Structures are given as C-alpha cells and as structure tokens.
Length: 339
Image (cartoon, rainbow, N blue to C red; front, side, top):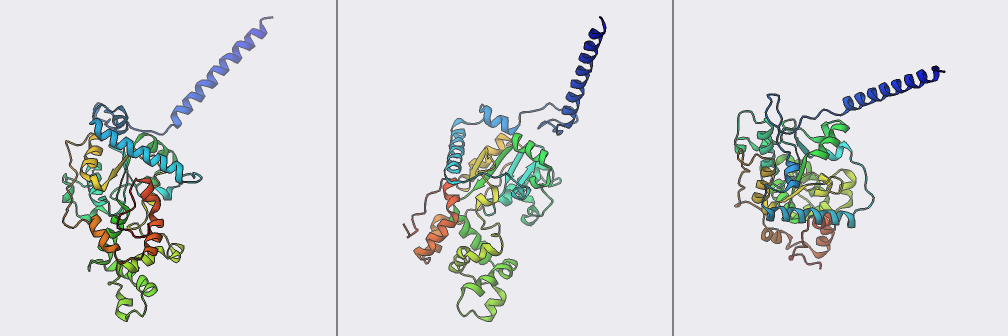
C-alpha cells in the first residue's frame, strides 16, 4: 500500500524540478540590459531619464506641466485623426537614434536643430572621441551614417526593451517655417549642387513652362512656387518618398505609434533642450549649442514666401502637412488666404 505514496512523492519531485528548469530558461532568455548609469567598475546605478521624468521631483513643475500638456494634445490628436493602428517595422525606426549609456531615444527631424542634437549625442555616446564641445564636431561629420546607432539596427526584443525603458524625445517645428527653411537651404544655396541635380532639374522639367537648357541641366534656380507645385503633385510621391528635409514629421517619427515622452519645439529650443539634458542627468557635463538667430527662418519670412502662392495651392499644401499642424498643436498661419 506504500507504492502509491512513493509514486505521488516522485511525481511531486519531478514537477518541482520541471518548474525550476522552466524558471531558469525564462530568466536566461530575457534580453541582457545593463541598468542606465551602471558601469563594470561598480559605479552606483542612477535613475534613468524615464524614471526622472515620471517621478517628477527634480525638474521645475511649470516645465513638466508644459510637456504633459503637449503629450496630452498629441495623444488626443492621434485618437481623433488616425485610423487603424499598425505594428512598427524597422523601416519606421531609421530616424530614431539610440544612446544606450544614458537611456535616450531621439527621433531626428531635419531643419529642427537635428545637427546640434546629433553633435550632442556623439559627445554623450563617445562617438566624438576626446571632443567634449559639440560645436567642435563639423556639421558634415554629425550626419555620417555609423557615427550614431539607430533603433532599426537592433533585434526585435532589443527594440521593444528600449521603447519601454528609454526616454523617447522628438523636436518639431511650425510646419511651413520648416518647409521654407528646407527650400532656402537646399535650393537657394549655391553649394547644394547635389540637391539641384537630384531634385531641381526634375522640378524645372515638370513645373516650368519653356525652361532654358541651362536650367534643365543645373536645376539651381527653382522658385518656391515651383517647389510647392512639385510637393502637391500626386506623381511626386507615387515615384518615391519625400526627401527627409521636407517629409512630414509624422511620417519620419510615427508619433501615433511611438509614445514620445518629450515633444520639444523649435520655438522653445533652448528651454526644451535643457529639459532633456536635465532628465538625462548630464546638464552639468554638456550644454546644447546656441543657434544662430540671424539666418533662422521666421514666421514673417515664411509669409513672404507664401505671398505669391495662390489660395488653391496654399490649401493643397496645408492638406499635405495637416497632420503635423494637428498633432503638434500649430495653428493655421494667419498669412494663408484660403480660409
């Protein structure tokens, strides 16, 4: 009569061993993730930027309230204006730069101080070598692929772990000021011959009546009107995606798929950049470079460029960039004539 007891005891022992094996493999399969701030030298771990943001005791409350408001506006706009949600793919993450040392994910948007943010991140990640001043890094070096890692380079499990635990931030700008800035930089500067040949010649060919042979060959005298015609032409996006310098922010950074913790604005660049560096705990080590205001594209300047654009094309262009206006709480510019 003792045999059943032995069988039950043996079964319980085997079950216990099986559970222990499962627990072992479960723990060993978890992606290795060194806590932010922890070093092999035994240096004490610090709070991550994400913890600092949501604990909310180390940053001025007024600044926190501003950024909380921006997150809420973005979330509400995503709920109101986006349709079926989809799953992120690596292609969506090519603009998201990773700083594993400080637990940061930064989605860079051209014409919104991205050169200086790349410089700062090169210093923080060690990509700048011994240089500690971001402005010591040439602008062209900041844009070299490989100097900074993007989230698309990681495995699926590593991507998910970073999206959950890192501070995610993006900087945005009034859409039409950004667009005019892109036009001025890429089509009115004599040194940007690559853009003139790549895009200017095509724009002249398609949107200029009776172009001169020299303009067809060089593409270096594209007017803002012709640029607008090119953008709103349905054939443009059927052929290829927009260049990143005039692509919409929501298409570059996918703010309705990625929950950004900080939405910085070009209009408050200095304040918002300092806030991110405070959250990362590096505000005493590095400062965000001050921008040159003498050449900055302003609202008044944008109004001048739009003066000769007909209400019909103003409306078409606004519809093209409408989601960026809505998601980031920018009003329709007063200089537009279609309203």
